[in-house]
Length: 351
Image 1 (cartoon, helix red, strand yellow):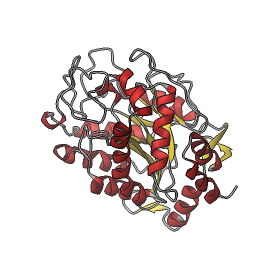
Image 2 (cartoon, rainbow, N blue to C red):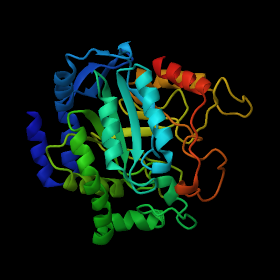
Image 3 (cartoon, helix red, strand yellow):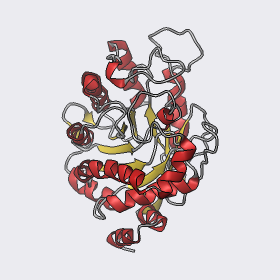
């Protein structure tokens, strides 16, 4: 089936379209780990190869390293008070001289919304031969689990999860609020069309039933124009809240937050989000793994064709957070890494 034919089916506005979107743009290739796997190679790859066939080297890097897609979390990077750190995060990825880079954004309002900045990140991570993977989360599941105490005004954040599951399937007003988030993101998606592999996930660490997740997929499909190429993913959080389900519909990418060597996920997304780590150059107290330990987790994940994203609690302004409501993002500190930490991060990305 030609690529454009799959997108024509978006008109039916149902999950079947989701399946066609991802599966039509898949082919059996060799995974980063050497086994057979399905990795999207559709219009995105053809357009990227046309754009980059004459740019095999970064002028500041020399030859780029052809490694499986990996990168640094930037969930909070839309908020302007974190901009110096956000630019540093993107710079570290550029300085790693890795061709296939990945990052993510939480775009539900938790950390504001800055379309111009996200477009700039897409440009930087797809320049001079690089290939970017950009993941967008449209809702903040961890914040919603604190619905009764949170002061963060994000989509669905103050609605009890069981109530939300029902209403997102039946309440036109709540559905319209979600649609408006997707519509707001469309100019960023259009900018990334052909420049980056783009993945839309209904919620970070979601508190959804399977039927609620399917409803949100269909709302996304309704609002993203058919000529914009993207994939759908899901980041379920089983056992995080009563009634949470974790089904992954056919053709939907699975994201899992873990530091286990055995994630059980293939051709999806793995991140240590929610799990801290220690720099080798820093304080070694506590039970968190080291960044070297996480490099081994990354390698195991990428043997199964997964994207890996390194998350840092301190960068997100949560260094001293333990329990209760999350601190207001507008009052957090977003520190820059030390030179020694920068060196370790760059080395991590190059392993």
